[in-house]
Amino acid sequence: MPPARRLIPLALLGAVMLVPGCGASSGTPRMPDYGSEDGLKIALVVSEFNDAKNNQTKFKNSFAELPPANWKQYEKYSFRVKQGSPKVNGTTATATVTIHNESNFEAVGTQEWSFVKVGDTWKLKTAPIV
Image 1 (cartoon, rainbow, N blue to C red):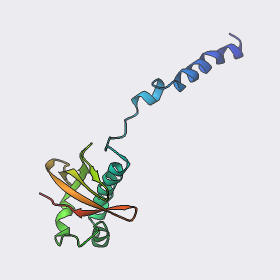
Image 2 (cartoon, rainbow, N blue to C red; image 1 turned 135 degrees about the vertical axis):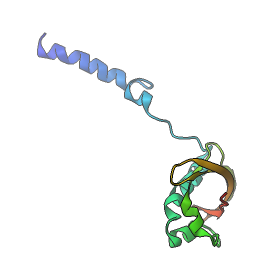
Image 3 (tube, rainbow, N blue to C red; image 1 turned 90 degrees about the horizontal axis):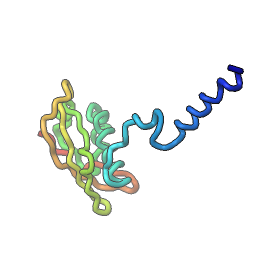
Image 4 (cartoon, rainbow, N blue to C red; image 1 turned 180 degrees about the horizontal axis):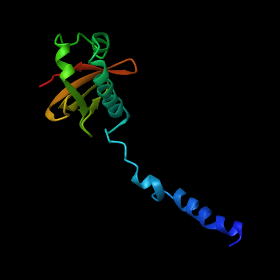
């Protein structure tokens, strides 16, 4: 087969992979649905809180108001917003947060956390743990 003819199958394969729903992108995990752009921002606040909980200053800065005094208790857990759960009402919101053991990621419960928008940034208002 002449060299130019060998490129035709490769060109066709490349064209097929560009069609939506075909090729490598079909196995790509989808972004979780948090209901809205603000819902996604709230989920990101909780995700970032997983790092902030290990540093007292960052922990305090995660809250809009006075944070809980027992900040060391949060180090034992990791937190994730339950998909579809953020309920946004203007500058306030709530979300169901799944709480996991940090050591083995075993789920230990869920709690409803509340959030408040400060300027353009979402911050924690309340974050109860089990």
